[in-house]
Amino acid sequence: MNTTMKNVLGIVLVAVVSSGLTIGANAYMNRQHANVATVDNSYGFNQPLRLTNYSGVAAENTDFTMAAERSVHAVVHIKSVTEVQVSGGQYMDPFEFFFGNGRGNQPRQPQKRVGAGSGVIISTDGYIITNNHVIDGASELEVTLNDNRKFKAKVIGSDPSTDIALIKVDAKDLPTIPFGDSEQLKVGEWVLAVGNPFNLTSTVTAGIVSAKGRSISTGSDEDVSKIQSFIQTDAAVNPGNSGGALVNTKGELVGINTAIYSETGNFAGYSFAVPMSIAGKVVQDLKQYGNVQRAILGVSILDVSKLNDEQKKDVKVTEGAWIGGFAMPSSAKDAGVEIGDVIVAVNDVAVRSTSRLQEEISKYRPGDKVKITVNRKGVQKIFNIELRNMQGNTKILDKADPSEVLGGAYQELSDKRKRELGVNYGIEVTGVTNGKLKDAGIKKGYIIMLVNDEKISTPEDIERIVDSILKGRSSEQGLFIKGFYPNGKTTYYAINLSE
Image (tube, rainbow, N blue to C red; front, side, top):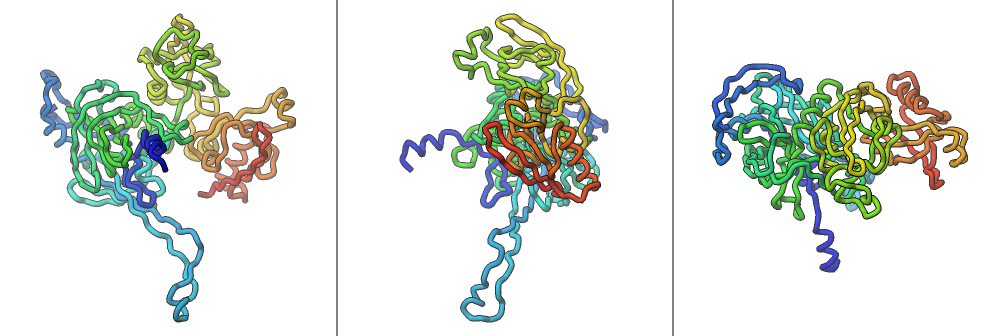
């Protein structure tokens, strides 16, 4: 590979900060006295409430000892064990091959891969927040507390879109970190990263908030489905820090360390944390519902700064989320929002980028109402919008809901669309999130014709089939889907629902 190509490939590499669960991967990634009382906070986790007098805290105060002491005991080490099935079926024992000692072909045994990361205790009764990539695919989780006690942990739920997971250990009276308000963080403010880099337990590093609402890209198709509005800091974070705490100088949890910017896989100056404004709502949903209740506006958006000359000819602002299209269905479109509008605020909170819009909307659930301010050719307009889920309604989805399992949104084909496609029935996939459809490789635009040899004419048809399988009313264990893409390519997909 020539020097130019090496330079191009080395420009951007986002390394997720974890020991990782893949083979050989370790990178994927105030000081005032307080009174203690036990309450239920807004996130639904039982924590000691620290009533702190913040008056007189000097901006130049850089003594982090109190913040470190308050947080280090609530950050844990997580060891994850994953069983990897080696491909190849059976192999010939070399002793049998050379000496004929009767061992014959030996079946290959699953190999165990051990990964490590960090987590933060957010409840005195054992709930722990961490990254999804720390626990993803693990058959066994072991949590080690700062006092060296060890516990087996179980997964309560996870959300790949935000890379947040919730696990639990069977313990009581555990130390916690109080939640902080990540939205009040300011660029230039001191923060601490607490975790277990390279299996070095109870490690604290300091830095400042370098940026807020930062999005990062690995260049993969999966980026489209991720919610990215990171806190960027220059606190040193390395493999093993994933899932650890980002705390302010008051010792409050303001983020979950998740990724680093690196060309080597190790810390190279910048790290990224999921703000608690996003992570807190995610773990509350995981605890209460078993999955994330995600609300959507139903819009396709682009940063104003990234518009081409044609797109920005009527745009009169320099910041915001420009609307380039609508999903079907779209609550924003129904409310009167138009293509070319620029969203500049949500509930009077300024929106300067698409990542900031994602962060604001991710706080809400289907059925919640928000005030959206848009700039239309220089004129400010306000719309009150009721948010919906991907299926276009406001109901709360339980863990066994067919829509949640498949992770797709669909629409019935209109008569005009049927004539265009030359079919008499079928439904169109209008969106794909994390779920069985995405895992199978189904993409937006796919026309589903048959599922398990049944004709599909409405979204309810496929949901009825899936629901029947999930509730044991069908002898089927999966779905065999037949359909095509609008370019005429016929494709079949098989989905196992028993896993």
